Length: 310
Image (cartoon, rainbow, N blue to C red; front, side):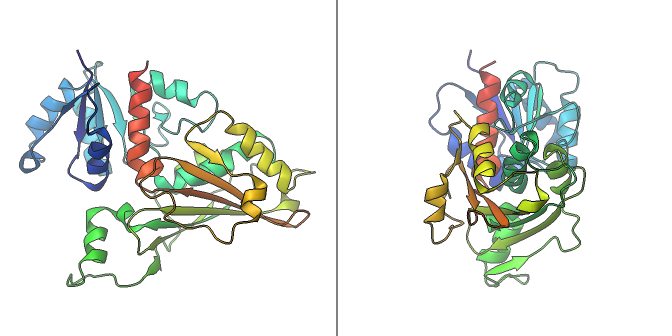
């Protein structure tokens, strides 16, 4: 019998992208709920408990409700794409490349918390340097990022794409999360192995999909002897053998005139760059990804495939 997959919230932005990635696959059976019945709690509960893996593409409270619906059924495994469980100690964090054992943790877990799009880039840059001893635990990290507007879901998509909407957003680029209390910060700190809360400044650009995450560093605040080359080497060694995360060679980065936020739109991969001048005082770490690819739906399918391989 084929594994049964139910996407709870399949009609939302993340759910639709997961369904697109699943189209044409004949190794799984997709369970589906009609859009008109998406708020039918009894039907949802039946489908959740009929699934081998349920992928939750819901707001936090609705995700918690869905998890409660399956609490007594150990045969159902969950991938949650909300922020509800990303720092929960009993949930596997669904960033397989985060360290050498994370893929195995995901593979064997009953509950997997899909990472946020911004944290995927930030943690992807920060954690290898923490584990290599280059980045001090108490470093005062700042994370600056821009995302495609699909990261805001159907409401933001409508605000940007519908010029007649009363709450239309006409700006080509805007900052948000101004009180510095963004919901992604806890997972950046915990999974980034940081003692201090990072400063996170997110923004949105007028393009549908794509993302740039930047983490600037002062070399003299890193471990003794750290430089552009050792930082790049630590990232390269950390991701050696990985297919989804690529560390761009220093000479290639040095020759680049710019980094385009939409380069990986539609892809489920991530590129990491180390920019700076050899012998200089500063480094800029940059992650490039699709906010709905490796940043959301693509990651959910990757985690599903790991769980199915157990």
